Image 1: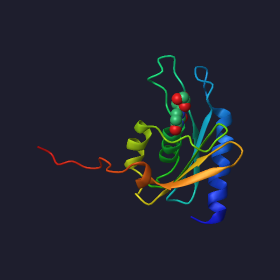
Image 2: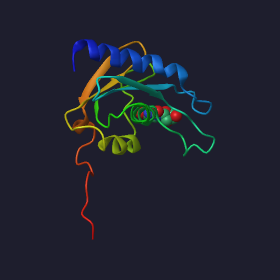
Image 3: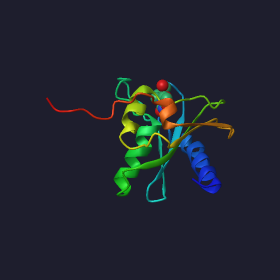
Length: 135
Ligand code: THU
């Protein structure tokens, strides 16, 4: 992850907030992932009247990557929302991302003014459920 890639990832996550479909919460979330192909894929949250069928920005970005490339590994993730850099991926997204992110992959949480924090994926998803043995 170069400084230039970090800058692009963060900027794209902020820009992606724009497209969010948020008639219920009004909370715009944007995300960007860096695929193993070196390309950036963005996403935003898409809400639903049922609430439960809502898709978060992080899963949108991951699905965008897989739909538009053969990349199946996410090298880095940025998620942007609100005025502070403390919007963390929800539990469902963390479990979903386990499949595609290594423990040492960086996760940037970004405020829309550009402030950010960075953690490793393992820091936000310790003791992850990643495999099982069949009975
Ligand atoms: N949301 C995301 O898209 N990503 C997160 O990391 C946290 C929550 C969305 C889901 C819903 O549309 C709105 O934020 C409020 O929960």
